[in-house]
Image (cartoon, rainbow, N blue to C red; front, side, top):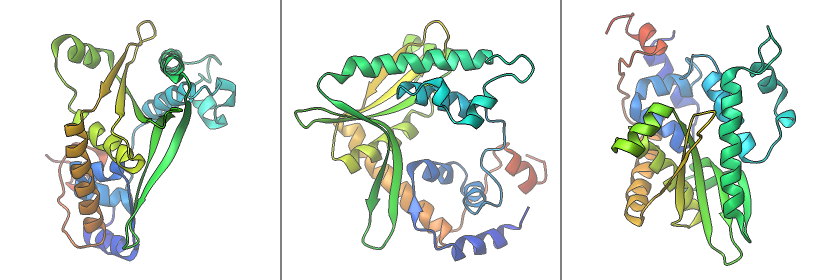
Length: 255
């Protein structure tokens, strides 16, 4: 793994001028690790693709895309090479995705949906902030609602709904969808938390208040600006020993 000074120099030479709420979140969590990821010197995620594939299945089915239209590589990964049948988690993801699709169908009314829409905010200095909204509902009266889909482990979902323990990631999700709402010029932003379950894929609709939107929009813009400063060498990144594979190599395997 390259020395961090080498990585800093690589980053400065990239002329990086794009930032998303998702990438900015990484810089909030672990600036140095995020820098290695941004320069392709060490990937942020080094585990298997199961979690990502689960999300892909949910999002595709939520959009109404049939399984046979999934990308070929995804279809290969969600089927056991030994039995030729879908893994158990695949069937659960399909149940969850269909539940979200039914939710969208019920809301449609006289409107229309746009899925996986890239939203961009261009600044005068050439910097572009961007991200992909999961779903945007535009109604005939001109109103716009933006949605972001988040799957949640059953135990975590139940603790929140039944006992009031909000997920630690809630503030991060607020900032992500707040950016989308800012670009769209709407104050109607909803996080859809979906319980991972093959029998009870409940959906919890979390609508952000105006105050939450305003605060989250300020925070996400600040975080994206700070991330770019680190990439461009204007601020020194902090390295956090977070127990990841990157940290194991960077810190020599000790915490």
